[in-house]
Image (tube, rainbow, N blue to C red; front, side):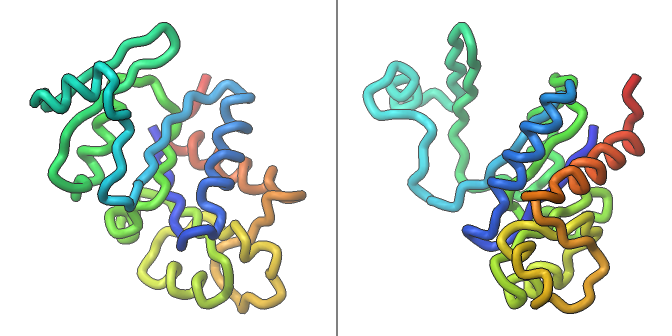
Amino acid sequence: MLVVSVVGVSKSGKTTTIEYLISRLTEEGYEVGSVKHIYHPDFSIDTEGTDTWRHMHAGAKVTVALAPRETAIIKKTDSTPRDLDSIIKLFKDEALDIIFIEGLHSLTAKRKDIPKIVTARDTQDLMKTLEGTEPVLAVTGVIAKKKAEVGEIKAPIIDLEGEGDILLRLIKDQISSKSPRN
């Protein structure tokens, strides 16, 4: 299973990039998972007053909500996990080809076993995000509309509009090199 990290500042195109790749890959039969880091300290996936909220509010450490089309696992934590491998283990029972991680740059930046897609709004954001981040598979996001402003960098700058197939091919090549599909 391949893990790809998509990193960049807020509003730089991370979610748009992942949404594009998930859509295209699943159309072709790939099994895809994703992780979204949420920075808001008061965020809760649950809604006050629901039965699952009541279970958690009563003291349950973990609650599983089962519905005909979805299963949700709600787990109380003291903080964002600091170990990327423990996050990836959440997917251990899934037969996935790839997991996209949105955010968590501090956990993925120096991991050479995890290719990165960097998104940026401008050249300053790009250079800051590229610093200490490797390996970088590609650069995309808002900055891709401003290629002429970017100096020479090692990774290709890909505009999803018109060039999305290039990024898709790079990802599929990574999946094939990690675990060839039949």
